[in-house]
Amino acid sequence: MAPESTLEAVALRVGYGQNPILPELSVTIPPGSFTVIVGPNACGKSTLLKSLARILPVESGRVLLDGADIKALRTKELARRVGLLPQSSVAPEAITVIDLVSRGRHPHQGVFRQWSAEDEAKVARALEDTGLTDLASATVDRLSGGQRQRVWIAMVLAQDTPIVLLDEPTTFLDLAHQIEVLELCARLHRDGRTLVAVLHDLNQAARYATHLIALHEGQIVAEGAPAVVLTEDTVERVFGVRARIIPDPETGTPLIVPRAHGAVAASAGTGTITGTSVPEPEHI
Amino acid sequence: MNTPTLRASGERVVRVRGLSLRIHRRSFWVGLACLIVALGAAGYSLTIGDLPLSLGDVWAALTGHADPGTTRIVLDWRLPRVLMALFGGIALAMSGAVFQTLTGNPLGSPDIIGFNTGAYTGALLSMLVIGGGSTGTTVGALIGGTATGALVYLLALRHGLHGYRLIVIGIGVSAMLGAINSYLMITVKLEAAITAQVWGAGSLNTIRWIDLTPTILITLICLPPLLALWRQAGMLGLGVETASGRGVNVKLLRVALLVLGVVLTAAVTAVAGPIAFVALVAPQIALRLCRGPGIPLLPTAFLGAALLVISDLVARTLLAPVQLPVGVVTVVLGGGYLVWMLISRLRKA
Image (cartoon, rainbow over the protein chains, first blue to last red):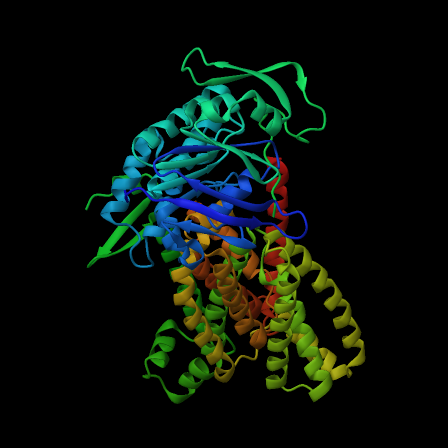
């Protein structure tokens, strides 16, 4: 894997007209961190993630990868350095696990260089890391939701980028599979990747993130270590929910407990706190 | 080198001096079988006609050892038609593969972007304005088809090209052009109307060498870039964002595919008229035979060739000595396919 690299956004404006999704956002993803972006629905989480990977066009401002504007990079070059797993992935009918995972190698391949020794090694490793080696020849549509999500993550792993962006990797999964995926993410982070994920569950975010970004109406309300960011005040401002913050009895990280009847009327619009898995609407 | 992982997806890696190609084993054999069937049917097709010939006679004529009469029958009369069926089938099928991959829809075909209806409009207009003639018809069809394709593309382009949008707009534009075509048909002279009708059915009956050469050239020119792009095209099946995140320049890829798809259809339609359904059917049959995750390009191409050669064989022999336009046969074939697909979908649901 390439050495750690830095991803930052400078005065990013995304979306058209009077009410852009991100009016002017600047952020630096700390190299080597497991950064989690949280915020209510439609706050611009996915938009930020997609802009960082150049999936969405930026109206003004820049995204810098190791100091250089990603606009100038070739699509393949960018995909060798930043791997994005969007929410909208679809597995073609009858595709096998190995075939799907091997497509993560696309940015490293060429018309006449379709399978190198490195491709073989990285794909084998990605299958092993996600516990999919025995399912390699299975077709993806036969797998459970949790297994399927592991296949997509394996694809991004095979891509072998120093920075990995995951858009709501736990959405639509039951609790056991959510934890399984988050543990997998934590392991990848420990192995030296910079991870950026959008998560809905604040307590999970607090437990796994090393760096937390709280987003509200396209602006960063707070960022830093979860214990610093997750104050009663911030949670109320961002999510519109009055909550108590207590130490997680398992890990000591902040645990958000909404107060009884704690919703603050008309504060954060549509946002609700923990446990909801409603995907954000597509912005484009 | 060992490639145990790829074996699990039924693929082999072929290596030549640092270069490597992934080959889906089943697709390879299906493609080879289709090629053999296509060439076999083409060979047989050369032997039949008013003067039946043996395969030996045909071979002698092809290699330049036959008497002048046989040589003339085979090389000047029968071969152009058979070659047109072979290359036309390849071009149409590949074009269908392109549009179905581009739209992610099994009903995607050059017809959906209004190409064929537009080509018909162009041909009718040229008959009306410059009074027909095969060159005029060809050029008119070419301009009409390409202009319609471009119009549909531009209309669908707003808010980013979306497969479903392309189909809906294509159907709308086709319907409008269909009305214009009907109007033109009652405006042109009776003779021209009859010629137009025959052209509109899609026929290989009158193909000469001079008509054929551009089709062969265009098919051969389009093949290498299409083969080179096909792996990337398969990535579109994962969704646009996922493909982009894997380093696919989706915008560029879509434009390139669209251009190649339109050019390939145009190469056939301009010469032989709109031959329906080959583009629709061949990719889906190849997909089912090869059992891979995406439409296989070469098996589709060879299957298209086999389909068109056999359809033309049927068109020539079914009511002999009357020769049907090949389009009539492919429509029957395609209609049957559509019914079968609808039934199998209903059963699944």
